[in-house]
Image 1 (cartoon, helix red, strand yellow):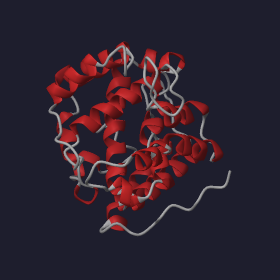
Image 2: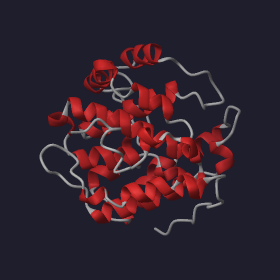
Image 3: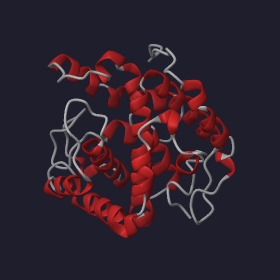
Image 4: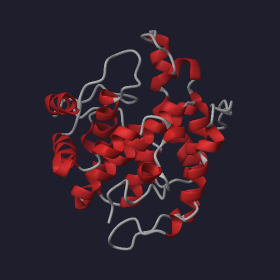
Length: 261
């Protein structure tokens, strides 16, 4: 299906802020993603960079959120690579899980009030639209599945299908809990106060078996608690133009940022 062109009004400082993205991703395809020599394809790197650029121009907070979710997901992957599978899928899928928000009006994404039912339905369409876009652009099926299924629930009643998530790939279920954890702790969500890390982990544990796969919730907790790894970086990733050089300077997604080998 043809897709409507997303709004591309420049976000203040957007082009300058993206310079580090272009520089870092220029080398992305030539870098090892895991300890076994897996490499990110240059074609997927270029498409990912283009989509993150579009998302940032459309709604900067959604792009920044995507990087934080990627960091959380890769911390989980590092702890359980045999369960979560390909590092490339984990990295690109978590980065692009919300790419469908380029089709959601900026006014809705930036709303500082509770949304109407109609507006919530529009926001909910981002998972289907994002998956369709990724499929049309030739991304592998597991990456498409992450965009499509990261709001499905372990026991059902999520969206878009409402079916239980037990048949999803483990990496889809991992991104689902990483996404929720970041949303709960996000200081930039105007419609509610953020939870601290301890409170958010208690919430994910309480929702394990209903909203989240119990194993995914356990991997999340263990990866976040292990040596405090990643916490310093996540605390910095709240403003795209002002990221400190050591925190997110080179998105081969800086291997140091994501704690990869």
